[in-house]
Length: 209
Image 1 (cartoon, helix red, strand yellow):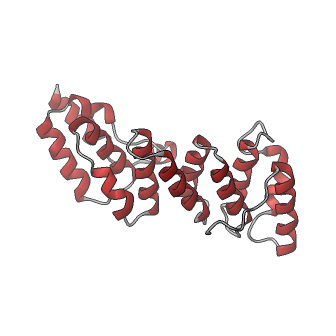
Image 2: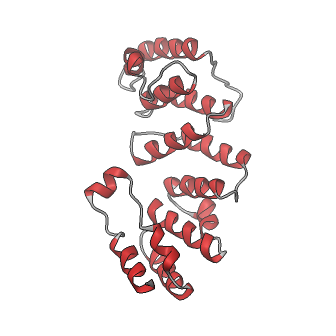
């Protein structure tokens, strides 16, 4: 049984288009059927190569089975911002990181969003799961900041403020497109002011951005 589980896990490791597109991690269920020795060997494999969110997710699952805490090391020591926020989310969901600490790290990640890439999608997904006032302020900042993430940050903010039934805020597309970084400062400023009126928020400039 355990040998079959090991094979299932290793078979789930290679990345392909479908796994990349769907955000599919490794076969974590297989870990529950492994012996401690097999889990130790898998941990070595996961730590020996390039570490992404998929490796961190698997290491967190092994941690929960063995009582170790490999993921906490990645929280501050990993060079990848995406891995750091993934580690924070994993620790928060397993009650190993308090909400205030997680919220602060999430807000920092939101404010640092640039292009709309994999980390933007992940961070905005986490923001949707923790729609606090601080997170909404961070989204407002990301909407104001001249980056490709402004469009999607504003769309999520509108949704979290209850001004759209759709997370992509289709009915507010003209406003969102005006926030694109290629537009003039006047166009973006007018759109941002509309966003503030729509959401009832005002950018808190006292926050350390």
